[in-house]
Structure formats: C-alpha cells, structure tokens
Length: 178
Image (tube, rainbow, N blue to C red; front, side):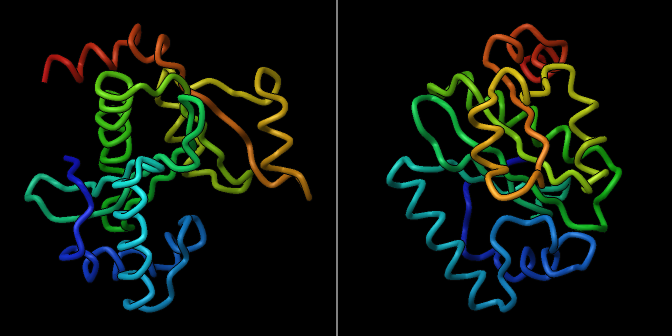
C-alpha cells in the first residue's frame, strides 16, 4: 500500500497529478514532468535529512496512484499532504493510506501530532477525514497553528491527529490486525 518514494514512478504520478480534479489540491504544483522529477528528488533528499517523510501510495497491483507526506516536521509534529489520482477516487485508498501512514508515524517514529490543513472548498478531502474517527478539528485547540496557516485570509480548516487518539481507535486495531 505504501512505499518509499522512487524516481521510477514519477511518470505515472505526474500523469495522475496534472488531472484538473487533482492538481488544485496538490502541495507541489509541478506543471512539467521534469519539474516533478526535480521536486521528487528534493523530497527524497529531505527525507534523508529527516525533515519530511514521504511515501508513494500503491494500488493492489503495486501501481503508484498518489503520494502521502509529512512535512514541516518540528518538535514531534508535522503537516500531512495526501493526493490520489482521480481514477482511484472513492475506492477507499485515501483512508487505507492514511491509516498505514499514521501507523508508521506513531509506531515507528517519534511523531506525536499530525496536522491536516484542508482548503475550505475541498469537500472531497473534508468528507475523507470525516470518515476517520481519530481526526479532530483543531481550530480552537491549536489556535496559533490555525492562524499561521490562515495569516492572509481564512483559506484552510485545520484538523489534527494525536498519537494517543490514533492508538486508541478502531482503525488502529484494524491496521495492526492486517
């Protein structure tokens, strides 16, 4: 389901990422394949320096269908960025990828809190996080973080996942069982 990033998958991922249903919501908006290849090399380097954690999301056949990253890592926290290609929308990949990634972050790494900033108009992502019992709205609890991501105007809703909430969740029990 998840694997470390690899330059060999860049063609497939770039083709999925430039789809108009996906492109507005990706973190690294690379318009050309070469630009995407360069950005992927940077992400791989950042992971080697322990400043981010990045994985490719795979379907059942092992084909790359999207990416999931933890970036801006600081003091046992970070921000989550996930995108999945349009042909794979609505098939449960997002939820399974998040569950597997959170299990890695909370069980194998020293991450305590993961923030998810979602554009207010991104209904698809809001529905996806609504399916995860351990994701909570962070607006009031992490007011400084909320203000920092909305410093110019209120573009994002802010959510968070704490290690303890994830570890106590039904989803965590499912991840461990599989």
